[in-house]
Length: 247
Image (cartoon, rainbow, N blue to C red; front, side, top):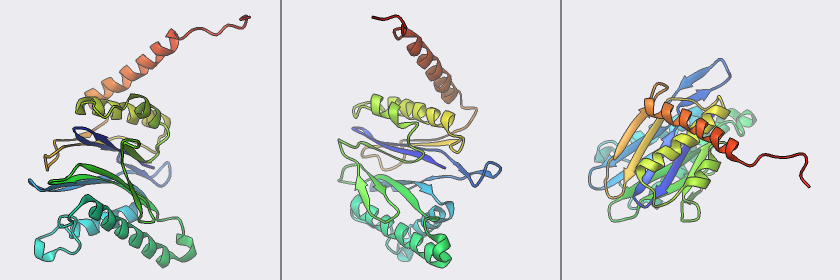
């Protein structure tokens, strides 16, 4: 399983993903699910992946091949004129990869090779943009009504984002919010696990403004996890007591 979140702020974009993959309780591995490409002063692109690992790795490998020297590029993300074109190209590639794997495996492959992708980034002269790309290759874009996307194990970490998100919040508060969301998910589902990958994409800065891998011994994440647990217990005990003898 996976948990990835992409969030739109007035200042830019914030992304976080876990790194756990598993095919059973006794076969757990760590694989990166966040990838990025940039052209200084011109564009910054990042993707996060969820779903079948072979499918997502095949898509990322092909995207990496397309970012080589200009004379070797073929439908490169580094040449696409808009973020919409980038999303379209990744959607086509994702659908083609899934269809090829399903065809090779016949009826046994139906539904086994699905994957989804969050795309984030900015091209010079345009706004930062965030997309959710589905296995069928179609996609939707984040908006004021839908300012963040989640893929993978979404249900445990969603409530805190819905309650605390503010488009005008600082990058620091956004990172704190995502850490609480991920801590809630980690506590509820063992198929999502540390380390976590974090990236901050600041508006009109065409390289990561901040990038970090958060491991199990990270002191800030540990403080967030313990502090959030204590705050929840305190909030619970501050609520009015229930009485069996109310009129």
